[in-house]
Amino acid sequence: MDVKKISSMQVDRATKRKELGIPEDAFAFLTVGELIPRKGHELLIRAFAKSNISGAQLLICGSGREKEHLTALIKELGISDRAHLLGFRNDIYELLKCADAFVFPSKQEGLPVALMEAMAAGLPCIASRIRGNVDLLPDSRYLFESSDETTLCQLMCDVVDGVQVGQECTRNKKILEQYDVRNVSKQIEKIYTELLGG
Image 1: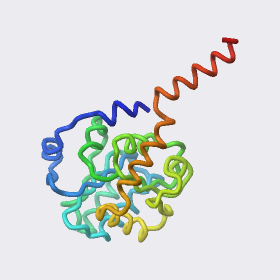
Image 2: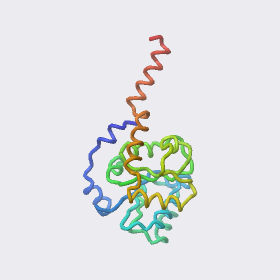
Image 3: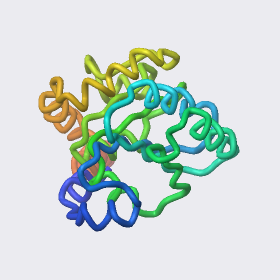
Image 4: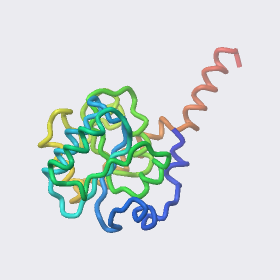
């Protein structure tokens, strides 16, 4: 992960939001992942609708077989003006820079790149308490069980209210240092040097 590249990226937030059709002053939640059941998008959409955070927007990036189902769910819940399926995107880093929080409700992961990218962008991250996520966010107050819609809803409200957000972001940045491409390259070089006898 090139942490420096992501963290230093500059984006015109107002212009990007205008392109997306969302208000400049709205609190925007972002998630990235294929539209399949394992990624937990339905739970996120339901929790977002239940939170009823004034003016908040939900941006979902990804394509997949659940698109029609999730589109219908958004319409059924009456949040079509606030929840947006953006499809496959090539501008994730820019979207991270114009979002206010990242939500990752997956039911199963390895070591999730999308979550690492959000951490590198400096966003507060809400994530399911599963393997991979807990490795990146140990002891975070923003973890929830992958089937717990109520807790996810509350955490979304908490992050809007700024509950320990600064502390979380600072700690996330520190944790992510070990995955930065520069540190990983040094470790690989050290291993090869030792194996090749200097």
